[in-house]
Length: 480
Image (cartoon, rainbow, N blue to C red; front, side, top):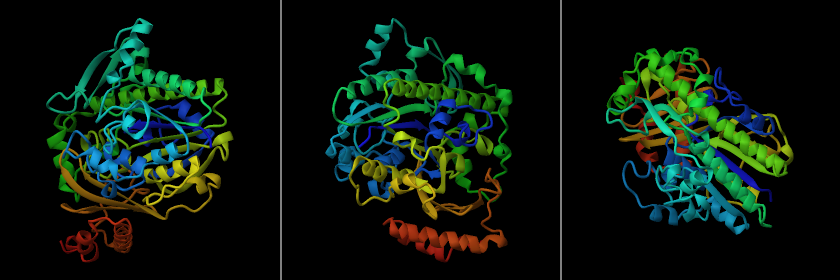
């Protein structure tokens, strides 16, 4: 059993990583990790929302099976204790196998109040949380003789000046930033774990680059607004698109919807700067592991809970009832001990659902009854055939929405229960400008995807199966 380091970033899109598809944003530390790892090209979240996605990470279950459908603390209240008590998590396996569990950062998983309730030591607060809530943060500043950073807000995405949905930068000592503090605490905890004869699992969960996009001022000059490419979809005309896209854009994030490209290019440059700042902290942590002689024998998993819209489709901010690739398609990089199969890639579909059974198997046991599939066989032989297709789901953010999304080959089908459906060729149309639902050339593709979705709904015991059956087998929309 090897030590396991699990690094997650929050709301990270692939276009921010140079080892994936970035033309501008550079992430040298993550790139180096990818060179030592198996990189997965088609990893998708189970749900593009923090709490459902993080609960799926822990359980390997779809949201409709683990019950945390919405962000805890934001939409419909639910009892974390009632939901979490009946679920098996990969932490149960790790504890059984004798692992020390450490945690630093954002938790927001909904199926327990905090990370500590699942057996972790360290800091993982309730709901969205903040690194400043850590009882160690103030003593940390005092020991260094530094003050909290000053937050300079340049843009609010909402009319109520919500600080979370904002962009700007931080001024002050970089050691007082959240990413530096969490990394420092992770280094401290790992050093403590190495004094034990037990293996350890440590989860470092950065709050960024999720909004507020507040990079440290020292990173601002790395990315200039004038170098940010204008999204082709910024001129979205909404023809043949679901009405709910526009309603979310206008009603929830009004100032963002009406921001011009000069504003949006600045916001995106802050996002890239924030990502690079976190990348440097990941590099600092990996350098420490190498100095301690821990890196080679360790398993390291890097991923994100979901992506970010960042102004696509006429200024959409955050995530919501839009199943676009920038929000659902996420990174997955896994380094095995001794860098086995380093520098290889896997082209098949995988999911955040697969992490819980994978971590459990790496720790020496099986986590049964999940919707995910262990990736260990693929890690051992990256050419192994994986999924042929994949389904995700969405239940609403800031207001209720019902969606199921399926990917197969180069196509994506979105079932919008209360709006028109969507069909995209994500290779020919990566900006997803053309909804192919009514194109006569794609009727066979549409039928194939509907059949595959219906099978996923049935196999995963989705309680929307019966309601979706008529929509997918005799769709009224095709008659319009």
